[in-house]
Image (cartoon, rainbow over all chains, first blue to last red; front, side, top):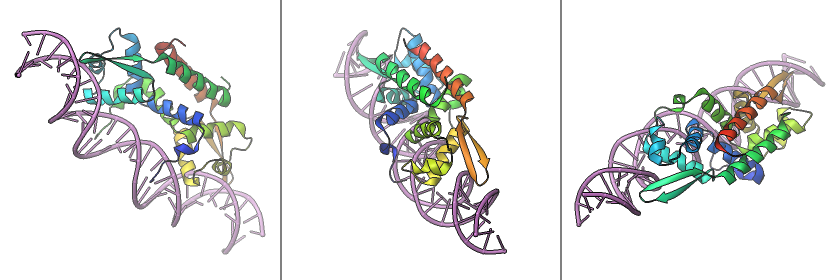
Length: 105
Length: 105
DNA sequence: ATCGTTCATCGTAAATATACGATATATTTT
DNA sequence: AAAATATATCGTATATTTACGATGAACGAT
């Protein structure tokens, strides 16, 4: 491959594709749901609810954070993750825009 | 890695993650838009509008077809691709469901 | 100061994705 | 039957993703 051609598309399509990529693993969808349902947002509590190791969960959290779907706030030795509503609302808006273009929904 | 743990999640989360995966490349988002905007749906016409080779576009079409977002109908030596509205509507519905759970949108 | 807790990062291995040219297949045209 | 056209698939190379254990860094408690 040598290099990716992803850059040769519109910023809009690239952004949406990147959001989709962040959602492209059931663990990450699950994590978003967990973050919503729990009062606590500690990594440990998330790990408990997933069939994955702590390091793997940490990587998934990193990917969600990369696109801005979640934020992590350091709280002593712990880290408290939470949904970033602003990004999520933008994602929903862009997603709806795509659907309105390509579909009769 | 040796094996994937994707199977250890709910069918719902797996399905949505798989749809997201299909949308996780700007070329595939572009293809969906092209299929909507054009009367013709020949592969050749799609290739013309993308900075990618014919074989690469063919692979992207295969991925979209895999999850049922598009259908391909053989028409002589050509293949006519089109959006599968049924899958798209289901995808939108499931996507909205996710957003309603995790977001105040 | 050391210890336990919490989490990220490093190193590593296997799987999957992305991209292309070359080739194969199928059909239409000549 | 041969040539042209349209597309899929194969082979291949590189990049990225997924997963884990081990290690490291930061903090609070002892």
